[in-house]
Image (tube, rainbow, N blue to C red; front, side, top):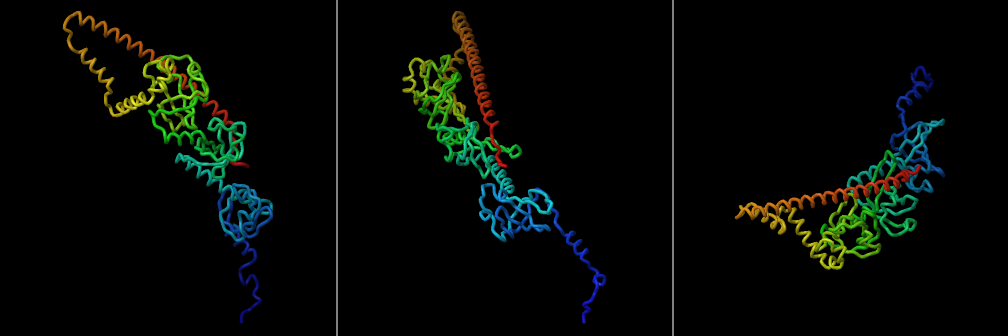
Length: 384
């Protein structure tokens, strides 16, 4: 018969020993840990979660999702097991505070970084606007579109509720910044249907000292002042007016920077025709564009164009010994004049190229400043 009157000493295991054993196998939790937990009680503004600690942990309703939650039941169900982020250390009651929202944010940043690396185009609806641009949500994160990267004729305020295609400009979790571009997405989509050397019809939407901005099917291309005519012009205003319909040729497509470069100079049958006889330029546009494409293709394939063949023939003739000293003298004078003319042309082109580079750098600097000013107003991606 078992003796039921055994003392604690005879058993050799006291309440203190039991408490010490519990402490030995107790988990130590720290803020930032991600742990599994089971919902065992849903409260009006939160829920109690069993994560294996001595005291049930608590998750407030504002930490249940990256999106707005009005009731805990929208996210959690009783006896449900899932992962939780430990938000804060134990309070005076020994209770930890948990979060699902933080886990969703970490995964959202990981996802947008992946989308940026893939150069993906995403779509999102505008939910608000401010002085600097428009606000959207990407993977639950709040993103900002600078005003300079919104390509639409609508006022910004009218964009609320409209879904836009977007490209990533900046994904910076450390600085909590998510910046996107509507303009780049539109240009890329349009570029997929455009080709260098193609003639398109557009409308002048803006004129600056350095060139004219041409709307071609909803995206803007730059007709730089140096690409308007072979002849020098003082300002694009002397050639174009806002809302003029123009015929231009695409000479460059820069998808990475979201830019389309245009030219009417390459369409001139004779230098200066854009100033003297614009209608002739437009009538001959397709013909001149075909010659331009032929020259570009020949250069790519290393084939000499007819003009280059003529030039080469001239060089060969120069090597033939002249019949008389008079002829030699005449050719020497002609060659000297040709060299002088070539050097003058080279010098003129160098000056023009310098002016183009200077203007281009000025444009880039102006756009960089405008974009920087807009980005300074970027709201944080995570709303605290």
